[in-house]
Length: 462
Image 1 (tube, rainbow, N blue to C red):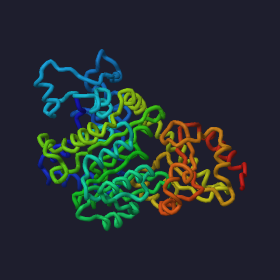
Image 2: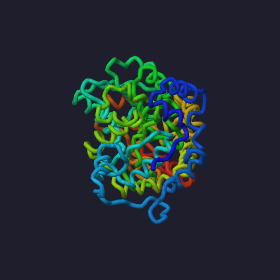
Image 3: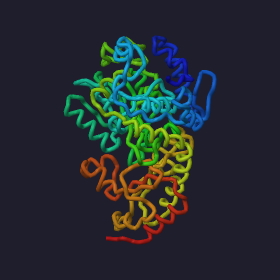
Image 4: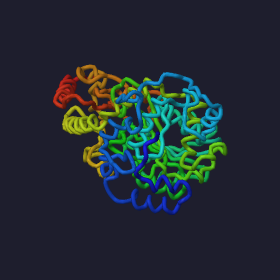
């Protein structure tokens, strides 16, 4: 059974009470401070109780009966589900009754994870996918049609950018803008614009989008506002606070945290009025409007596209999520300390981290994220220092392309994950050829500083 939400007014007004919805938005989401920190400590678990973030995740499975009293929702590996009554089977297929039709559309293990994610993001529902990219792709496949227009941050992750360019080849228009400037987003909107896509913190140059003002623009124009929350996680920030319609999380990263499972998710915050969206299929309008987008995502984006999250992966992610708050506390502290160390080193030309006063969006990040700035940073070495030789001298830090792992990971950006873009596009995104990306982990801080100090002291001038 789904978890009941605390923000009951938002849930109700999607069924027609538009004036109440707009008043709730103005009262809650446009108030002036601490969008991330203010409500991170509690998650509504029932109509009459609120529990802390970690308590809610740890005990979320037990909000409904679990088989044999297990503490975790067990693995359900069956692909098919049997029914004694043909009418019940038909009702499940038609969306008139809850249940499972076929494994490609989900199973009890992934459903339990979806309930946790919905609670973490304070949404009305979640659909999980095999990867974060599958989640983003499902939004585009399910909600866009030929001729529709998307406005996206020019700083989005390389694979996301590649996906959006692929959309252009299939009949959608995409405009990339500097999302740190909401005026550029507004200027790019056309009558055909259906959604705006941004990330909370960009990967790898850690630009912070003007999330509040973009949300105001999307709300005023009736445009779907998609916020990728991967780099912050729902512990650090909840995009519902800035009016996001849909929230994307790559579960592989901080939520899973252990580098042992791929996964992605889309959460509907309940803020968008789907009766205003022209691309909802009539067959999905038999349910309350709050369910229209989720149903279309599950059918068109999951069932038809087939990027299903396997139950084994869902279980790994759900268990990993139990320690999200503990890991993020350590990761954020390590990242802040490491950024300060690198900024003071003579061999480092520039450090990009929202927690530093030198960051262009530092004050905005302070306001949005409440004094913690995530675990991603990047830096550039001074001319003459070989970035590859530097990386090869690291002993604790792992050379790897992943993010959000317990281990600190490093990668040369221009030569790997952004190589396909070419130097011109990299320059437009602010990516120097010597840029090194660091995903900070939970190691002892002194060990990390010692490792970077050793590698930087090695010289490596070409």
